[in-house]
Amino acid sequence: MQFEKIIIVDDDPIIRRMLVGHLQKSEIAALGVVNVRQAIEEHSKEPADLLVVDLHLPDGSGMDIMQAVKQSDSPAEVIIMTGFGTIESAVEAMKLGAANYLLKPFNVSQFDVVLGQILEKRRLCKENTYLKEQLKEESFVSDLRYQSETMSTIEGLIKRIAPTNATVLIQGESGTGKELVSRAICENSLRRDKPYIKVNCAAVPENLLESEFFGHEKGSFTGALQKREGRFELAHTGTLLLDEVTEISLGLQSKLLRVLQEQEFERVGGTRPIKVDVRVVATTNRDLKLAVEKKEFRQDLFYRLNVVPLVIPPLRERSGDIEFLLKYFLDRFAKRHNKPVLAISPRALAQLVAYQWPGNVRELQNYAERAVILCEEGRDLEYSDFTMTAPPPEAAGVTAQSSGGWDGVGQNGSFPTIADMEKELIGRALKRTDGNRNEAAQLLGINVRTLRNKLAEYEEGKKASVATE
Ligand SMILES: Nc1ncnc2c1ncn2[C@@H]1O[C@H](COP(=O)(O)OP(=O)(O)OP(=O)(O)O)[C@@H](O)[C@H]1O
Ligand SMILES: [Mg+2]
Image 1 (spheres, rainbow, N blue to C red):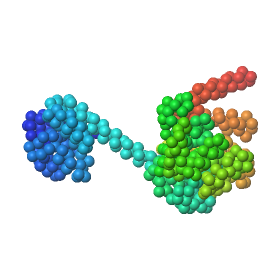
Image 2 (image 1 turned 90 degrees about the horizontal axis):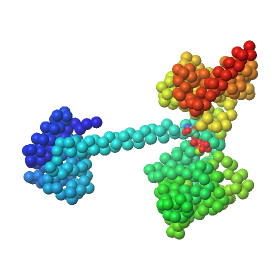
Image 3 (image 1 turned 180 degrees about the vertical axis):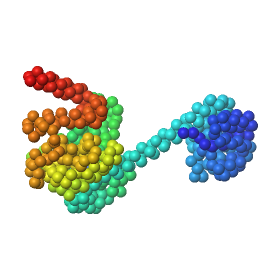
Image 4 (image 1 turned 60 degrees about the vertical axis):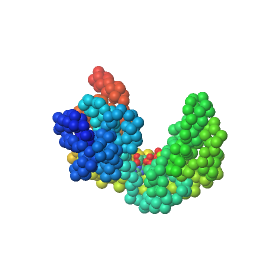
């Protein structure tokens, strides 16, 4: 990145010549002018991306130029030069929006350093904008996708409850999309531009969870070296996701109940009540009613959370989504991994729809990615390309033998054992990576040492069988 046009504004011809000459050597269009009027005129005729401006000019101040530039829509930056060595005026210029300042006298290498700093700042700004866009894109692609009636009803509910401040409890098996639904609620709410904070109650050790929720005062327990804000404070004006809420101890449940009712709490070790305005969304993959019956979860808290219940059915109960999501993820991962989009054979599709999907959409998503990475081009995808196992015998009208997906001969006759599948999969990964063990291990999601050990085992096995022949 480089500047294209720079205007130098100084009534001192020595400075003008020095800077213009220096910039022209680097093939930057540089123009020298002597006063405020000329600078503003030239900049409005053909905007520069940087103006280097002396503070004291015959017809006014360099600040006037800076103000004019800032008021116009131009993204140009301004550097202020001052010959009187007054740091105060330079600092004042920075406060009013100057990108940097130069104290006279300076030489061209000092000038270059300042230009370099401004370019670096611009580069970081651009990178930041790009990353933000990428994040938006990510959340767009991870949007809730469905075709089933059930999910369409759930989406309707999300749209209705999102703009309210009601607490929402999302229940569903692992991988059904609870977190995605929680995000959708936030994105459709009036709090969409406010903080969205998450606490995974299952991942934080129990003794630290209270401080995670409410923060702590300095010295409130060993290790509390600094005052710390908790998640409720961070989520103020926004949304707080309590992921796996059933994992909270009974003691903390009563404190949670109080915040939900009064929107008020104290930090651990603190006495001052802190007021917050937080919308709470909670998720659980356990049956909360059952947890209440077992006295593991407070009934009053259950009612307080369950103002609007949302139950996401497991994937196996919404078969309309299985084919749709498979195709959606195959397409998405094909793009991500630069692979062609492959079709699924009709038989495999029937088998996949009959599959139980214990890991729900997360499992389906992982299978689709693996199939895209390992598939051989030029044929339709079969059941074993996804699951690496033989299809379930109960799959409508299909038997394990006739699956067609597994074509190796295992130790167990035509039905492969886990060890057979593992060997086959390692072979495929090595083929795909041209024998590169590091890449193959990455593809398989295992440690390269594990891969080496497995290969050594296979070698041993070969030797042993030759020896017995
Ligand atoms: N309907 C859907 N459309 C697109 N992607 C989905 C859908 N449902 C789930 N996913 C994806 O599946 C994965 C699991 O979803 P999510 O994390 O929301 O599930 P969860 O119910 O919170 O699971 P857990 O109980 O294990 O935390 C995520 O990568 C998510 O993007
Ligand atoms: Mg989750």
